[in-house]
Structure formats: structure tokens, C-alpha cells
Image (spheres, rainbow, N blue to C red):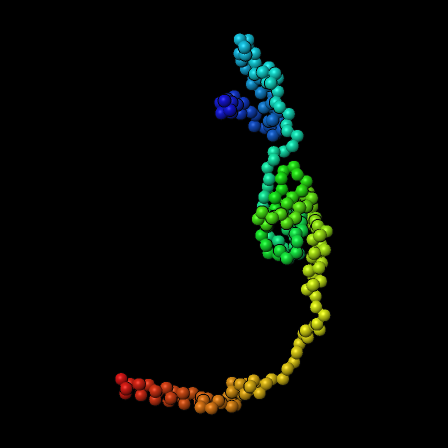
Length: 212
């Protein structure tokens, strides 16, 4: 019936719709067409002749439900270094020590709260702020626990010096001299003249050929 109604509407109304109408005017034109043509269609009910419009008035739609459909929206999020979880333009707190952990944010349609859980364990429940409000919602217990964790990380040791200048050791000086060629290591000959290198490689090549 729905497909037949759409087919009839497309053939009897859409093909006759003027091109210059705006969307608002087209909607008004469709409403008038449905009232004039659709509601006047004849029907038989209990042996008596009636119309579609009369049947519709006798069978009004039920009122909408007071509460939305009980569905739950669940998304996966990652806890930030500040123990916050982002959801629809706001951030909600969790207990400290969960930075980088993957959690699930669940919101039941129509409910004023949302849950943040890790598996089957609910970590936090917060009042849900309007989407995009940019609010940071922190539980008082989470704030206290985070402050304790931060204070516990402090130390009374002297701060590290930014620059510590230490003189090079004897081994470092010897290695530097060796790299500069000033002090070759025992048994090591530093080639300065490339002619010596060519002669050495030629002698090695001749010896290899004689052995082969």
C-alpha cells in the first residue's frame, strides 16, 4: 500500500507541480492535494460508504510516548594525561592512574547522567552536560585523588643542574689524539700520503695473484 501510494503521488501530483514553487510552497501544495484528492477517496466500512479522510479522523494517531526509546549510545574513548575523557564536546573525569587506558562512555537516551566504564567496571558516573558546552566535569573524589598522586610524585632532592661541565678524561684525550693522527695506536700506521696507499694495495694485489 505504501509503494502504491508513493507511485500514485508521483504520477498525480509530482508531474503537475509548477517549477517556480519554493519548498514551503511545494509542501503547502502537497497538503492541499492530499486533502482534496487523497482524503476524498471512497472506502467501505461495515457496509457503509465512507472516505479515507473520515476513517483517518475516526482513528487518530496515538500520542507520542512520554519518554524516548530506551536505547543506550556507547562509544570508545582514551583517557587523557589529565584523567579526563572527551565526549560530545565536554570532558569528564575518571580516577587518576588511567592515562592512555581505553574506556567506554555510555549514555542512555533521556537520562541525565552518563557512565564511564572499563569492561564491566563502572569507573565514574557524571551529570551529562549539553553537547558542545566545552565543560570540564570533575568528581570531587577524583580531584582529591589526583592531587594526592601529583603531590606524591614530588621530591625534596636538589634539582638537577642544567649544565654540568666536566673535564675530558685521559682516555678521551688519547682517543681524540688518535683520531687527529697525532698519536697512532700501537701497531697502527696512519696513511698520510696517498701514494703509500696505492703502493700498499698494489703489493697486496700482486701477492694475491702469485698465490692464485
